[in-house]
Length: 175
Image (cartoon, rainbow, N blue to C red; front, side):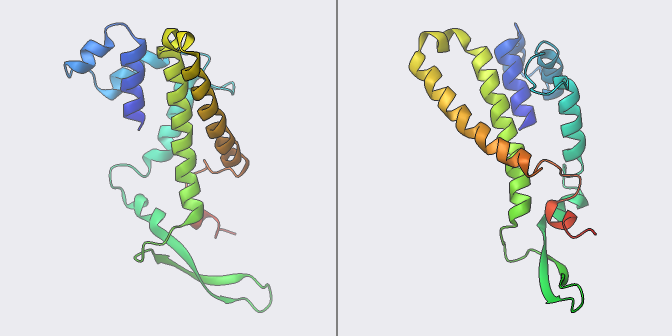
């Protein structure tokens, strides 16, 4: 998704980038360099956009390109008993061969996807600002969509769903 966002942003915002992309002469990493430096007001925090994206890539890079760490996202806690003294659940981490939904992992993935959607919306606003200014109904529809997605993102932020150094299902078992 980051590659798609970078290519879209560069093609939509940087003069000449669409032609380079169309001719197959622009890699996503080149596209990212073209547009992220020119957008300084996209982040609500005081973190510059290139820095934010570097941290995001660092956190998710552990799971890219079929690494063995990616498999840990398919482990789930299978409770077996309760500790008689502490009342704490005891169990095993099992491989999810039944295709169960691991809710806390799904929320972390959704938080990542939701953040990308918000970035795309902001880029659409920038790239198509003149069209949106002339088509108020489109702008209102985009505002409504963004507001709903922002509410979802706020819930993810409140639950710290974007902390993905370890899959949430595995991380919750750490003392």
